[in-house]
Image (cartoon, rainbow, N blue to C red; front, top):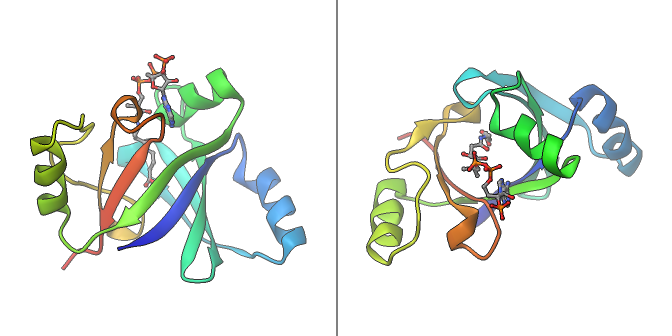
Length: 131
Ligand code: CMX
């Protein structure tokens, strides 16, 4: 396993990228993930990424998050080898899944979220490269 990315909710990727550019991190792979209601952009840092998340509309979960908290760290994504197995195992152990079945996320990866209420306040994303 590894940390695939840390998701940061922003009002505008275009505005937020300036801070990361000053740090020497270049924005790349901008993508609209319609299914998740977000526009995303990645900043590669070592073997992981920072993912900037901009809501596409008011129905996006990221829009709600920004309204409530004004943006900031939104989720941590852990890459696993077998997402179906990881979800079954977490469910069996009593953790609350947001997605019982994986959905398609950025880069065409399989993704699924675990509810922050059952993880001690951290929205956790599991992701797996599609085989
Ligand atoms: N981190 C920690 N806590 C969070 C949270 C987050 N990102 N988002 C919401 N919460 C908390 C809220 O503060 C709230 O807590 P309280 O009841 O104590 O106030 C509780 O969870 C419920 O929040 P809510 O605003 O009522 O939101 P919903 O229940 O409607 O949805 C969540 C919350 C996490 C299920 C929803 O944001 C979600 O499904 N997120 C996953 C989808 C997503 O974020 N997709 C974009 C990423 C795409 C990608 O990476 O490719």
